Structures are given as C-alpha cells and as structure tokens.
Length: 254
Image (tube, rainbow, N blue to C red):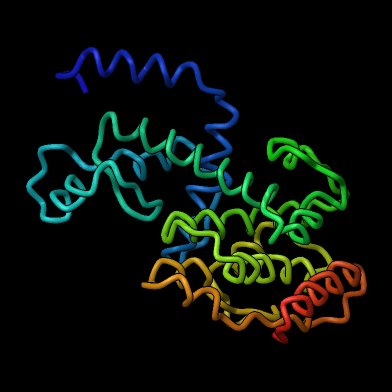
C-alpha cells in the first residue's frame, strides 16, 4: 500500500482502533478453521507461522487466478484469496460484521428460538453480544457451539440467506457431536469437521466441503442428518431429546 500513503494511514488507524482480542478470535476460532476444514484438512491454533495464508494476491500479478480475484473485489469468500493491501483490512471488517449478523439472526429470529435456547442454556438473552458470555460447565459444549457458528458462517458466506431448514440442519449436525461424545475435545472436532469416515460418530458428513462445493443452498437443507447417537452416552440425553423435539415440530424424521 506504499503507493497509496493516505489509504494506508487510514487503514492502519482503523486497524489499531479494533479490539485485538476480537481479531484473534475471528481468525483462530472461525476464519482459519473454516479455511482448513473446507479443504479437508485438520486445523490448528492460528499463529504468526500461518500468516502467509492471509497475505493476499499481489495487485499486479498476471496469473489468471489473480486477475479473477481482482475482478471479484470487494466481494469476499472465506475459502478464496483476496487482493493484498487494503482489501485485507476490508476483509477483516466484512467478517466481523458477518459474524455479528449471524449471531443477531439466531438471537432475534423466532424460527430459531429453540436453537437460541440451547446456545444460551435456556436463559432469556435479549442481545446477541450477551450470547457469548453464557458459561457452560462443559468445554465440549463450547466446542460444539463454535462448530455450529463456523458452519453457519461458512454457509451464510456462500449463500447469504438464513433458510430455516438449512440453519437447523447445521445445528443438528454440530450438536450431534456433543451427544455422541462423553468427553469432547478439539481433536474430535477436527475429525468430525472433515468427515472422518473411520470414526464412530453418528454423522460422517464433510460439512465444510459440502458447503464449498454446493451450487444451491437447498443442497445443504436437504442433507440427511442422523439423530440417533452411536453410543450409550447418557450424559447428554436432555440435549438429544431437545434435538428430537425440534425435528418433531418441523414434522420431519431424520
């Protein structure tokens, strides 16, 4: 951006005004895992070693894919590159707003009141920013919750709609992992997200790859999500019953 000194100054000023904790969470909890899982790769904590992933495409590059990227701006996709420079800062802004938008939708849309109740532990939460403040005794529940938000962000980034059945299928898919596992850690999340067919999970769908390859949103809303756990884990019976009740209200049997 050195050839655009004023734009660079404005971008830096805007960047330094941001909450660094939220920037770290955006990359570590959402963008970087989605980038990896969409490619069928396990993810890991985002550190400075992975920064090359977000360096962008040189503005003057003559590669065919670079020209295509340049013409696509300012439209972003989590799984696609962007033009280096100011578009990096625009990309971060875009996904911070997008993440807030999906949490606002879950909080305020009555179609998702059952999902909101599960995510908020049954508490009457009125504002989306308060949803993340709800604490659970199980770290694994937090992993399932984050997996759902990742899947929904990936979906909304691709199709830009909140079709109720698609959102609920993503919710069922993410939380069946919590039902399946007595003790849920990030290693299990990694395997589940890329669709480990050798696992004993109820569902072995590579959800992020499915979303990346889908051409129409109904390819996601029509997915068959299994709601019968593959284990006799009784610890999450209530959560499992809740998932079943939601499907009964929809008049669907998975």
